[in-house]
Length: 502
Image 1 (cartoon, rainbow, N blue to C red):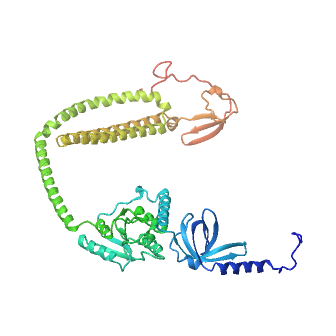
Image 2 (cartoon, helix red, strand yellow):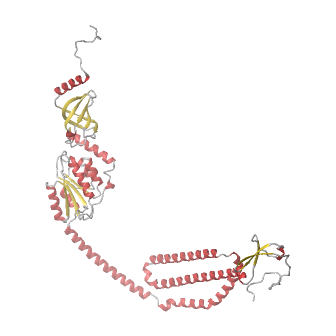
């Protein structure tokens, strides 16, 4: 018979029948197996199932952990972890592959756990959770202390007893499981819960947290190596002391906490000082403070007496100022008259270019400069007073007198400038052509508004506009104007007369 001829005597099976037969064969031959290997390609499904690969250097085996079994596994499964699993072998017809349904999973010895801890430590260190700059200082004397531990162990009794011996404080205990399934979630929830309390609420927010547990094996302390606990400790806004195990036990929460205590009792000692020692220290500081104050007070009293004897008399202090004031008073009338004459001539020259707006701006600038001078004077006086602190008592009255004189001089200068500005405004109004109109004169313009300064410029029948002091009127020239010689001006034949001539 040829090799390629069909065997007609074989039973014909459907794909589903063949898959079911293979499934029964595999499950009967491998009911329960215990397999050791390295995890790879771990996937947590939203349904709660876990899909993974179990492999060694030569082969790979697909695995699945149903939700009920996954909840009993306390480890966070990660690729690279060497484990020992127990389960039953079966097939998955949908993809024509065989797989193991895992019922239990545990690390392959202590070395695997230590390797997992080291790998997790490197990961969290790279994220900055163990950075020393994140550490907070412990409060010197916390009012409320929060303790996260088991309520039935000896740890809480040791902490309360030590706190009562050193400095009694209010203690809030958040009871949690410290090992086993769900313990890591309870510890993290306790840390977040204490941080979420309101400071003014019925349950006050603690000033310090202590996470404590007694000694045990690495497996017993594994909850404090979980990422959820380490991240909660690193995110805590309340200073946190880690007191897990004995002095030789090291967990990842120790690196994330603000302070690590070797034992729970040592954590209580770090939390509060000794009350009797504080009382002795406060009494000693009070005595030293009183003695220092008395010595300083006596020294200041001696310096004040010496400075008082060195001060000059009031008559000697004001003699020079009085004499200068008398001389200035005698010169003041002549100076005012001369200044008035000078300003009158100067204002007569620039009256055409003066505007109230410009004068106001200039006055404002002068006032601002005077204000700046006053501020600089005050600043200089303060700097001088600070630099010559030891001589302040000797010169205080003299500086005050000069300051008052300076203030009076500044105020007088401002008043003088205001008066000069007012007079300049009056002079400007006197030179305005409207003042001439008030005296009975009129201003003649053509219909375009151009002033007509000569009678010869007016034509017969030309429309005119005449402005009086109280308004304007329109007129029409009825003939050629009669030209008459202008009146002879006083004060010379060629120049303009002065308004100030009698």
